[in-house]
Image (cartoon, rainbow, N blue to C red; front, side):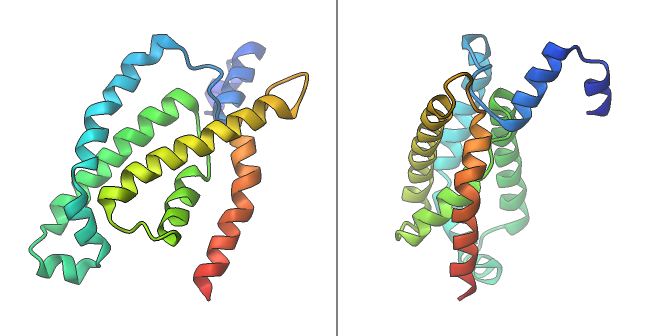
Length: 167
């Protein structure tokens, strides 16, 4: 990272900083092949609700139900890594969406992964859409990176979730 910053022009530095803060401004149709690479993994992981529900019961219960823990942990980590890697490559690091949205939905009673995974996708997309609207309207002269908006709004919600879990 230090080398990239050192040898970059001022335009490249601005784009790098914008990517590090997260945003959709640099994403266009030329990167659609990357988005298409997400679809098979996303569909596959949505069909794996049974092992994920078993894992949510705890390690001992999942093992007693016959789930091969080592296999499913590694496969789910690889699938999640692929989806996160492609998403961050496209839009940069947009924080707090993946931390806050699933916990809010669990507090609303969605615990079955058959409902929770699509619910997280829809709620996360909706939250990002609202953050994008706020980012575009917050400053008249420029557009804020979405990561700035999600961090500003998500940090208090995340602290509230931590305090609520501590009770």
